[in-house]
Length: 71
Length: 550
Image 1 (cartoon, each protein chain N blue to C red):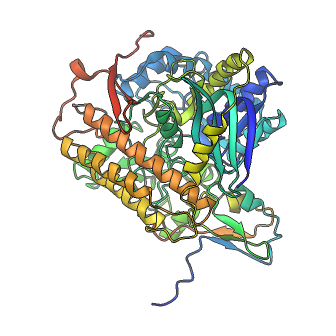
Image 2 (cartoon, chains in turn blue, yellow):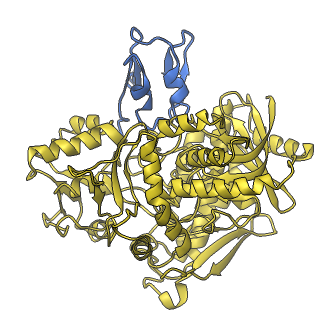
Image 3 (cartoon, rainbow over the protein chains, first blue to last red):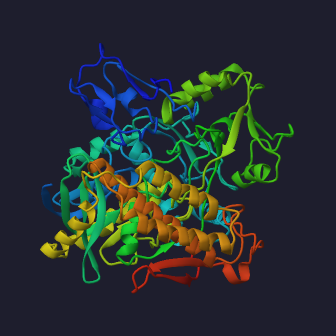
């Protein structure tokens, strides 16, 4: 089976991300956690695509996409 | 696993719309009260209005349609199964509430003469005030925090504490740190919503868009276990929303001149007027889909609609329509019925409450989607959040501090943490939840009949047993097991209530193929559920409708 690379709904631009953690603090479903460098990633797949992380990010570093089943 | 023991005058379980407003009101009344909020997510964006709201659905403006007229119109939307006093109190306090929100910075839409934009979403009267406020929840949360409300974020409530027959607080689990929180409280208010993760959405994605997926009926399950009465659990409701993404947009488009057409190309709205059940009938009778057509509208109206839809409630909609190649100027929008769910705000399911937001158990109040004030929407969450706080505050000043016993704490801690293990779980949690919810979709929702409902109950009993073997690798998963347990309770209780109501009612929401007719003579009454004395036993009783207003 070919590798699926497009599973993460929350895309973080590491160059813009300041590791401030606001998105991690605000995520209503506890999806986002920091990786070893403090960059947020989707640790849990419970995304509601509410868009809070993208909206709250002060550095416009986040873009969310709708799950394939929804889009 | 540390234990954090706290005391509160008022403990609020759930920091969404109702909980946030309750916290603010309690501090307004008496700034010296210690007010604690358990919030499963983050207080600033927790709850169903995380990304804002485009309307305050029930407002009775002075000089406009009266609170009594609201009671009449809302009663007709639930076929008369409604106690009138709570709905009257809500409508009476609604204008003052709107002015208060406005004074805090929430923006309501007004016409050129400064009059509020009022939309007609009820059979009679204009009670829905248009609002443009993506940051409504942030405004409320900041207000609460500035008043000294103590928020315990990322904490799922696990059980209510009781001393004899009185509720004396609750326990919670921090789903990030694993901290076990014990909050002894003089008054406790449940405001943690309904059960949105009931059956699976048709898209197949486990989290529907409409309601906050963290609302898993936790408050109902714990209040039920503590002896509280529940009602309206047979009111399994859904709504025709945008297919797959399930965002609401109907009234925003209808009030700006959109037409509704069915799959046969027939226009089915009456000059912008159409009820939810009329649209659902098109699907149920094979004339779907239902489409919102706007290609006849002038550019300024289209822009206005886009402005509201793409900025306030769910901005992600913009990306959705772009990806599907839908331009409102050219293509219609396809609607589809959402999955069925339970909710005291859009539907009728919830804790039995009176007009003072008091439940049937001493020391326990409920507001918002957790409470059965049929079709109360956001206005109900705010008004009864305030009412609950007023009553809870009055009660708190007259009492001594309760204190949870060490035995109580140890027993609950053992129950909550027992699935935590380094061993692999025999079942995948997501798959287990999916099966539970698919079973709800197969047997506990319309069209219903006795065989299906009893089968739903049988399956839920089976799932409760299977749940005991599940393992959690971390605290997030531990919280998920607690959530799934609450979902199972809700499905089981809904099937019990649906089986008890031996008639059909509320359009398709409680259609029984074995009792296809509505029977007002026998069934114009509430169905009440309460835990029995034998473990696993549910007592079903009936209660007359309170009609003191009309």
